[in-house]
Image 1 (cartoon, rainbow, N blue to C red):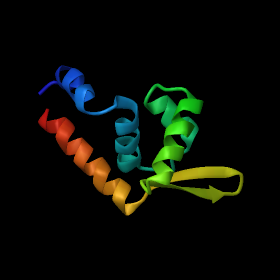
Image 2 (cartoon, one colour):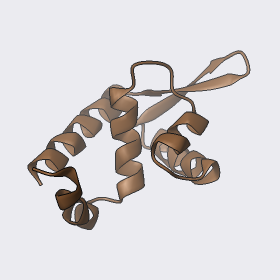
Image 3 (cartoon, rainbow, N blue to C red):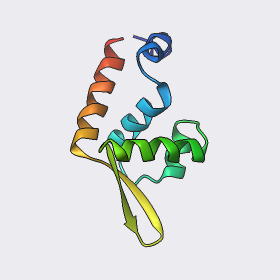
Image 4 (cartoon, helix red, strand yellow):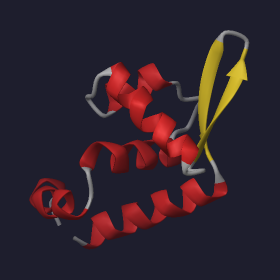
Length: 92
């Protein structure tokens, strides 16, 4: 199934940017920062930070300070939800 074909119906069920942020974090091979995530999903840094703060309140992600840097990591709950989003996206 072509990824671009399922995009419109996926967007009907999910807001694309927040959903893809979780999936990107789940599939990251290295440390992820908000600025990197913004580039990966083609979104502004301020919008990404706003969404990340909501995700943190919902216990989906946590910020991990390393010196002056704030790394992002999924919580167990966030990882489960990201996996489910990915599965649904594949099915659509």
